Image (cartoon, rainbow, N blue to C red; front, side, top):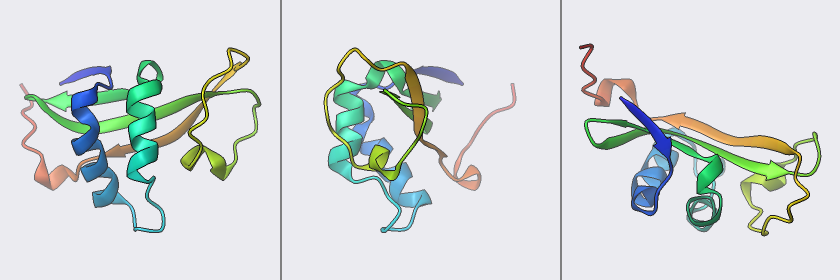
Length: 103
C-alpha cells in the first residue's frame, strides 16, 4: 500500500470509485473531481495497492470553519486567505473487489 498526492492519471479511477460508492444524486460531478485533481492535488490523497488506486481523500482549503454543500460543487480558485482544510470526500473501492495482500 502506498499513500500519495493525487495525480492527473488518477482522474478516471477517482470517477469510478465515486460512481461505485454514491448514488447519482450524491456524486461529486466529474468536472468538480477534475478541479480537485488539477488545482487541489496537494491537499488530496490517493491510496494505491499494487499500482491501482483503491481509495481517495479530497480536501479543499477554505476560509471558514463552517462547511456547506458548496464544497461538492465549488470550482473557484484559492485566494491565499484559507485557514482551514475541509474534507469533501473519503471513499474506497469495495473491499471484496480488492486483492489486498497482507504481507
